[in-house]
Length: 370
Image 1 (cartoon, one colour):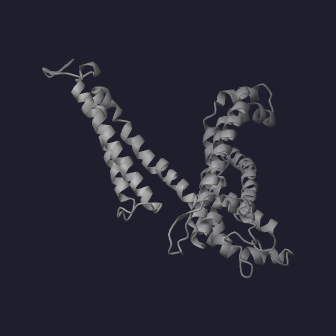
Image 2 (cartoon, one colour):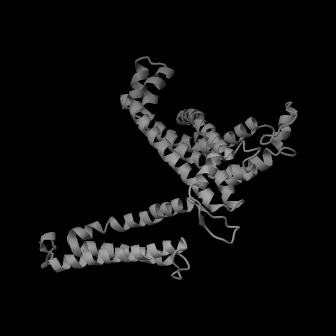
Image 3 (cartoon, helix red, strand yellow):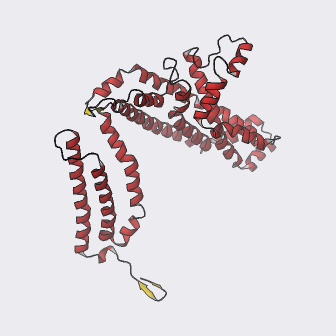
């Protein structure tokens, strides 16, 4: 009990809830869930061609899901009382996340096992393991995965450059604020805009100013994205690095400014050189920030597509292709929804497993330093 302004506020505990009220709560939750299962099952049977109930789309299933979510929240209050009200602070948000992530993922898994081409009037058809067999024999897709290994490995080089720039901008140099803004300019631009301004204009083979400068320096055929697979892949990686190195730099710069200056000054007084100070003090203290910047950058790198689509569309011969750009063309150019969805889900599984192993490995490696 609590007294406020002379009024007695009574909190209903679980023990004070009547049996009829609990049964009503359970009935509401279970009944709405049974209706959801019936509507979903009927819609699946119609999609498979076994039973036609006249459903034009999946809207009845969505309505049944929303109704069950509301009934679940109401039922928690009826069954648990005050504790159920506390659950309502979290339960709606959890259901919202499930609606936006888990359910679309499950639907995507279902679509991945269908033969569904938007250019066909037949609609989706169950394909079994046909899309998996096609993926295993798709050399272009595996080439894109190989390119992603190359692009991702370069994150360590980007980290080294970003760390050097962060150290430079944390030092007492003239026009330090100007350089901080100047180095951040590429990050402020859209990758599509960068693709057009740099890749399609400045690096253009015939009239681009960078290409003309390369001719003056002795490069007869300065085709940055068409001369060879190695040059095209490297040019694409450098352009993407130019855009996102400032992102890592600003994270590392924030970490450097948060370091305890007393420890660094004490090492200098004890006679430590600049390299010893960096290797023994600054770098170990910066490991948490460094690993966070690397992991976040890897996540962004695994989604690389916009610059590739804008400049080369994966060419020449798939040399610059990424998995995301390849899946994009599978949807857009070939309208193959079923196969493209399977490729995306398989790529998602690789990313989840890879990042999980990476984070665990980095955590074990960091343990002696923290």
